[in-house]
Image (cartoon, rainbow, N blue to C red; front, side):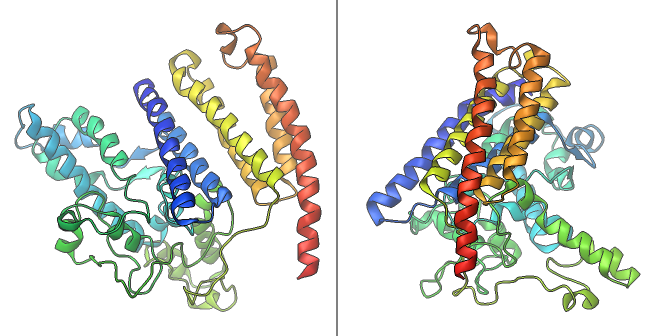
Length: 423
């Protein structure tokens, strides 16, 4: 846990810098519109995912270590070959887990967050799930287990395999020649993120594109079919926590409303998007039918609110950096309290980004919790050891945050209401 936190403290600033550089390049080179709220939503989703991973809030039905212990028929020597084997095994597992997440209703919920942005950029690569409480796909690591690849090797290679999927989430890199036949490239992955009928549910590979070609799910990017990004049942929110449970909430409601007991049971395992006949017409969903003519989710907000959203985002970033650097010192169960507070912070400021007038109450509740923690602990989780009184600065920020959010929510609420009346 502590080692992973240290790795993330090194990786997070790099990813953030690359996201900002891509945005800057797009603006200067192509005059692309900068969509700050979409970017903040994506980056905030990354926050929630890494905190969940660090805290280890998930289990596997069958663990890799157990498979190695009981099923290994050979043990590879600890050379470079064992790491290559682990990497390929993880990529094979990733392909099938990814493909099934697109094809089965309840599994789609844990992957929908990654496709929820209606833009395609490096920031959307960081939209990762927090709803994966059970890992169903460890079984696909069976080839590595049979070869006796140690679990420590899998654990070492896995973050590298994940980070290697970041770079190809961009529209600024075109075809890459002979690499198109071996690796997943930006062109391949643009197809994967598209909702065009020609592209949907294609190119599930993560590093090596030959899995799609081998198993019949490959589709090249067509010059005559421009990619349109998002999901066909749009989430229409910047709140990554809501997005994570958007689809499962639809399934729960459909299972409740349908009168057919068989449908109540099978809805979870049917193809993604399947709904019982007796609820489709009675409870219709807002679905994109024409991918070339629909209104993207872009609520109008003032420069003041955008600026404050960035301040909230970067303050949360600072809290996370401190958290990951002091996991052992904070200890259990306080690390879960800290993690929960970060989740609450993200929920609050992304509700404000959505112009939800109730976001003030979320912010007030969050800041009362924060001030209570400072009063109980004497400072912010031991921060005063570096500079006497710095922990109390966090408390001052909570007070100011409540006041500023109250003002902005009131101001933006008036503008939002005027917009509604104008329409």
